[in-house]
Length: 241
Ligand code: PEP
Image (tube, rainbow, N blue to C red):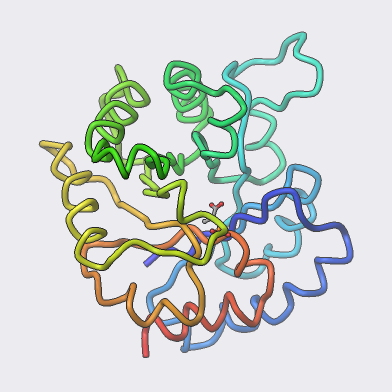
């Protein structure tokens, strides 16, 4: 199981101290088969990567530019630069960035570029509340998958994070049976190799007891709760207890 911490636009150098607990936990037996990955803001990737030098915790970024090479793009970071400072993963297509105008074709370019730089991609998809109410979830997910992964033949370095937009930061999670079926639907889109599918949206140390019963989920993308080491560790512990 993968536990991916999305720190969004939170954290500064003093946050490094809060990682000691997680590092200790990552070396204990309690972590079981869990794999921890932190995606802090760009400004902290290098420091996190140094901090995690002697443990198995992975590190990723929350976005990247669509060009895999250097160039005149003020304020942006390409995947090569991320790789150079220790990132192994990158989140692409998060709904907070889609909301700001990132469309499927831009996301497709970003994914290709990240794969070229040998980063593993956490590809976010999910429907809005209106789309859900209009029963368009499957249509939206199909479109996001088809266009986002256009001309990408090998999906072995792609994780799909199903994040219903209405579940992010709201404390609301999908009904278990709906989630089970949606994850199955996503996996069935892939005829040959099924990708790992993560769930994201208000995962907490309280609702993990229910989420863990859904047996086709390969891990979680965790926003708010991941910024508190105790809560993050609790989620992992409860997944295996
Ligand atoms: C996210 O934004 O990726 C996320 C899952 O956030 P939260 O856990 O806070 O809902």
